[in-house]
Amino acid sequence: MFTFSKLKFVIIIIFFSSCVNIAKKKSSNFTNENFYIVENINENNIISDITEIYDTNKMVFVKGGKFNFGSNIGLEREKPEREVIIQSFLIDKNLVTVKDFRTFVNDNNYITEAENFGNGIVYNDSTDIWQLVDGANWEFPFGKLESIALDDHPVTQVSWNDALAYCECYNKTLPSEVQWEYAASERGQKKNQLFYWGNDLVVNNNYMCNTWATGYPNTIGYEDGFKYTSPISYFTANSLGIYDMAGNVWEWCYNWHLPYEGNLQIFPADLQGKAQRGGSFLCNPNYCHGFRLSARSATSPESSLFHVGFRCVKNIAN
Image (cartoon, rainbow, N blue to C red; front, top):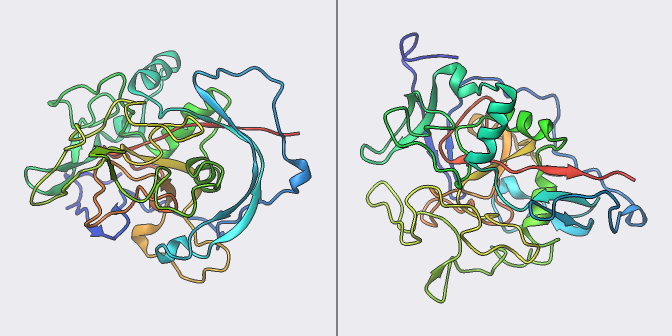
């Protein structure tokens, strides 16, 4: 891990119309795969219900099926759209909270990568600069001198490796991109619109998810009520009962961020890493459409950022 004392570390911010991508803390984005491959199943093998008992207060059963994955009208990295058939699975209703993660840390004496490195990535809105902040971690996402994270907010400053360790501790894993998009789009039923609630971020004068309403660097709007993260379950869930599938924090996915089958483009360095979905409180239509159902982003698996969190899934087998 490079530090400012060893090297003049520069974080390059590249603005895309779908997200804000941050240069990686390490170059560990290595995979021999060329495409993100979805393992289709036979529709006859879809599990329609499960016999094991699970906590319905925490997880939702998502019956598998056929849907159109990706988007032909999105950014190049979202193309091509194609029909896939996936297996049923369980997914967390909510993002993993600070309280949840504290329990995991205390029970397992776990030390996050941000704690090992001694810093995390934060956007300083007063100076319009992204920077590594000493002491920034899951408890103090803005640094030790700033406020402690609230228990009912999504945990941030956790790397992909940290997130996977949490999931595996509870016999779960991170969602693949196809699982995430299938669940976010209500089993594919809302793929004809931008968001699971429709095509407008504001409905009847109500913000439907946590985003920066006016954006930066000139002004930071939080007409939705929150400048940074919001409590879980604050905004309306989709019809499956899953919350925060748009805005609040980007969500780590299990797979590498690779072109879809049939897409021959080579992703630039800033788009290499583990995939992320859902957008964050930083997103604004002026520069970032990360809260769209098909939008994608990526970050290196050891990076910890103040606007990235996660939720878990539990895969089901016959």
